[in-house]
Image (cartoon, rainbow, N blue to C red; front, side, top):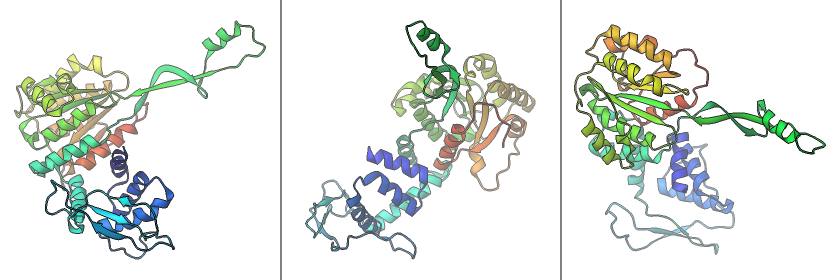
Length: 371
């Protein structure tokens, strides 16, 4: 549980060295007397050279510097790993054991590689980096906030007097009556994702569908559609907890994978067949596409206008938006943008965190458009 809490803390504070240290300190240290030991171990682990003004490890005045003693190699570890160290204190304290550590050069490289991976474009990932990114996404608890329901629940402090309870209690033999209160109930905000799987999106499709599968297993209700020349609903296929099984079932269901793109016709299909059922209760619609379109731009504009009127928030996620110098000049993007509430990038792990934060901060009243 501490490891999971630490990973979540790093996602919140970022990968700057001092923030990273404080996140580890807060999640792994539970006793005040262990703080000096942790600070000393952190310096040794990262082989850090501290600049003036950075933190200094706190060492008790009556304690000597710790000594390190190597134990036999751990079976199964690579030659690049050090032996399992044991920290021996000379002040009579208990031994503090640490997990297997890599050499200082390896750990510094690992830290830098993780930071680079977090900001690297999905389209530039190697197969190994895709696997690492998928593991990082699974460690994150993806939540997209709540909406205020029309239903109310009892509350110590609320906005609505509980008249039913008050009148029912007044029927008894009471000398004094107390007014109780109710407040609006919070429910997870529903999400509808419409993902482009055309040929121009091939570099991003696997990771984005993996991300949607993780969200589907989480707190917020999620409906997932994929499209190229036509629209397909794949919520049932993504219901499997195993991501490979889920994506394999989706691939069998979708016969138009990596084809052309007709965004306007696919949005028309959604508006006609699915919108009335799925766009209630404050739903947020995510359209994930690079905007390359072979269809009629006038049809796309009309269907986007209709979709925006029916949804609580309409967000267009474009993986190309994270590229330096990108300008939304394609016919599809130019036709859709006037009806989009938020135009955001979705090209790396950092952009996924930004998306979750953007949806979480959406209010219950439909706000002004922002791009």
